Length: 293
Image 1 (cartoon, rainbow, N blue to C red):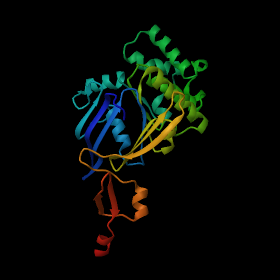
Image 2 (cartoon, helix red, strand yellow):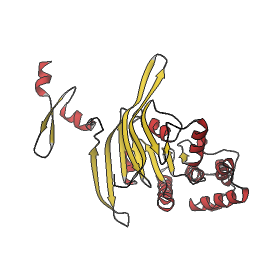
Image 3 (cartoon, rainbow, N blue to C red):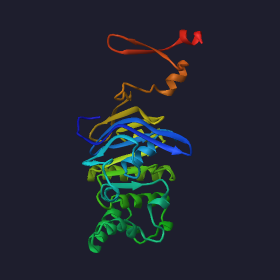
Image 4 (cartoon, helix red, strand yellow):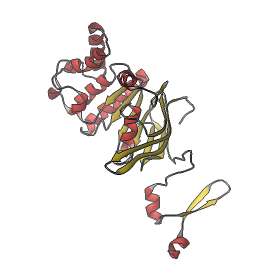
């Protein structure tokens, strides 16, 4: 993280779902800050909590406890009408399944116009902006094509144009390249990066693919409902990577999650020994404790 003021702040965020007589804890005290204009990724396996966190940031779900703000919006204080306005004007969504992004009976330009029409933008203005957005994503020659006449990658680029229609400050992309080939994926990431740089939109990509770290400057890994690791990449002005550093995240309660590979390698379980050294903390397997049990 830089010293840039936070655009998104999550403090001790908890989400509990009730399933029949059981309670499922999806988020367990998440702390996260994201600066305005960042393009970052949330990664983790299924059940790690990343999709739950994305839905909360997008105003599609509410946390059980904690605090979450996006810009000037305290998401816990929004009523239903305010949530609709927040989703319409402040957030753009790109889903993995193209059927969730585009209406099949509308052309590309009509799909991009739709969010603006719902927000009361005049016909001439929305037609001009829709055409401009489709040209930006490289599909100016596909304005009148319906989704079934577009490739999977082209559909996702139209979806990005739809997401940007009302000039949101936050764009949430859920596995945006999950159903396309590597060449189309590169085009999609380039399109997202271009909007990030040119429009200053904050972009969060939710994915299980750790290789996304090569395409963004910050990756936050989630495990068991908490943030666990963070990867920061530093680049020069030409976009070349200068360094890549991996960190374990320390939350407000002083908790951290050791990388699972380290735990497995050392056969650690239940307890670990901790030693304070002059300039670091050592964490060691509890060999003696294991022998006692």
